[in-house]
Each structure stands twice: as C-alpha cells, then as structure tokens.
Image 1: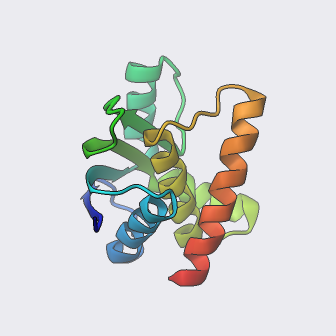
Image 2 (image 1 turned 90 degrees about the vertical axis):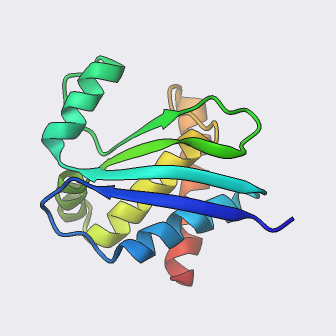
Length: 147
C-alpha cells in the first residue's frame, strides 16, 4: 500500500519562512523514514513566541515560549488525522544563531521533533529523551541530505 501523507501548513507568523514545500517534504520524509503506511494527515502551525507561549501556558501549564509543541490525537492506529504541531519561527531564529545553524535547518529539526511526538516518542525522562534525540538526529541528517 502506497502511503499518502497530507501536510497542511498554517502560517500565523510575520517572520519570513523558507519555502513551505521544503517543510512539507521534511514532514513527509519523516513519516516515510518512520515506516508509517496509509493515509496520514497533520497540521503544522508556524507562529511567533507570543502565541506559542500562550499555547504552552494554556495546554501544558508552562508560562514560557518554546520551540515546538505537538498536539496528538491519541490515534493508536496512525491512520487519518494524527495531530497538530505548533512551531515558533521566532524561536528558530534565536536558536539558529545560538547553535550556528541556519533557520531553515532549525525549522526542519522542529518538524521532525514534532512529528516524532505525534508518533508516540516522548522526551519526559532522560532515557526517553536520549532515544528520541538519537532518532531525531538520524532522521534530520537524512532529510538534510535528501532535500
């Protein structure tokens, strides 16, 4: 069965984004690498620190901006709509300068991270964080070499 990945991009940031097609491809490639089959859809919201801080406060009870938040549907079968990812373009700009990365590369990393959360990965303990970071790094590297 050929997979059909539908990635909807919502932009609510005034900050410039790289071509959204590359962000969609990063999302689709992440799903492909993870071996997800069938019809999958997800939404990615690109926003600023003010809005992501509000989402973080409202849903995770953390009163600070963050880079990415994943809202999972708890769809254990991983078919159809699997969730939404909110990404701060402003945080990507800040972190790209801090880590000597391009903003585009940082945004792709957030896309991978968010999708891994939608697929059930979690970084709440140091052991699970290490597993997730290793997987994220391998996928991100593969995406960066294939785009």
